[in-house]
Length: 186
Image 1: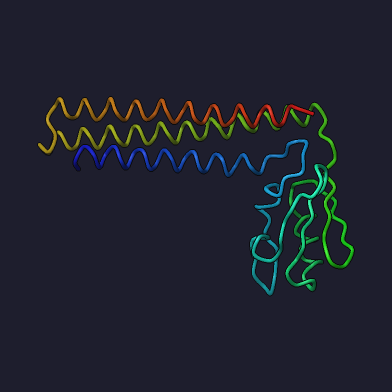
Image 2 (image 1 turned 135 degrees about the vertical axis):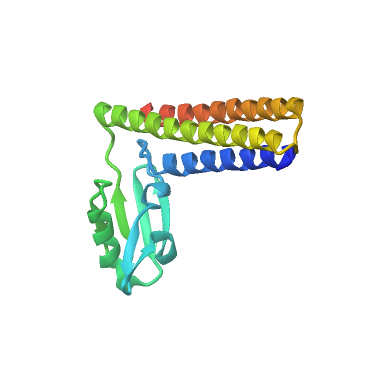
């Protein structure tokens, strides 16, 4: 495997780890209503679990409320059941056309739990990034063994993979810090 391919593969995989982290963090509650809070919900529609975004429009018209407008009002009960069955702890209300979820303010204890969850998710992302670094280093060693890279080229590849690792770990930390401050503010 050529040096450029090893580096490109490592960068793409590290970028994926960051995307997964962002997606995971978007589901963590802050004090404000955010449509991302219900993105992971699956509604049992016509016999199959379907992502909520495929069956309804989700919005946050107010800082303390999420409004879900189903494309087919016949599935409003299923949406309510999915919200109640989830571990989000929300109490949905429907008026026959839309489902409203009032977001209660977070207590200090809940905020601290959210911050610790953010830290866990960030550490998982960093571990993924480090695993990619390990794979990149292994690929560089193999390429040197197969005589497609010289010893110096192998060392250069390893240095570049290490730089990518640092860059993406810092990026993960910054994303987490931003999310923590959102969770901790009132």
